[in-house]
Length: 183
Ligand code: IMP
Ligand code: MG
Image 1 (tube, helix red, strand yellow):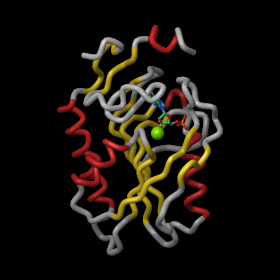
Image 2 (cartoon, rainbow, N blue to C red):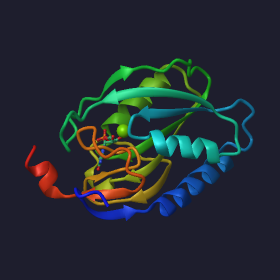
Image 3 (cartoon, helix red, strand yellow):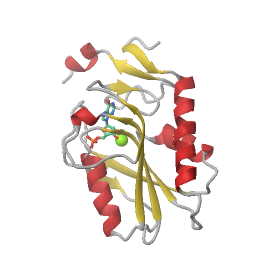
Image 4 (cartoon, rainbow, N blue to C red):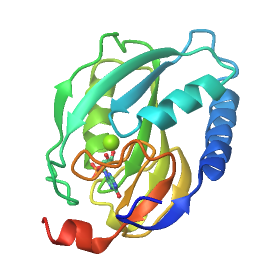
């Protein structure tokens, strides 16, 4: 285990099971849809979860990516999400699936939801690996959440602290001393 990790929250095996659950839920939701939904990954945090979910789905989907920044090098969101890289595809008239790593304050998804619906998307479905409902500030809820967690800062499987730990294959809680000495 990485020396900065206090404990493992989800193993690779547990993550694989959550991916299956999310893919099955999406397949059921879009089983009668003729046009492939547009599955969007919000880079970089959701990248592994997204890649695993779209490959586990039976429903054909098209892929697109966005980068939104709000965290900088801290564990607290700045509250003002900024679109750093926009989509290639048009969302007009499309079913959009937003694949997120964590819904925390909800500011990011709240902003993206209005942004995408204003561009004329037919529907907007949020699938997230983690949900921190106790931290919510914006009025937004995930349609499917794999796992609820409390007010802890986690890393791995795409999730970072100051751009580190993303490539860990499991999800772990970061030792407080790692970010308290830097924040
Ligand atoms: P929100 O706008 O506050 O909901 O922020 C959501 C984003 O913050 C997520 O997509 C993550 O990138 C990041 N985030 C929130 N909590 C954590 C965490 O515990 N570890 C790593 N990143 C987090
Ligand atoms: Mg993210």
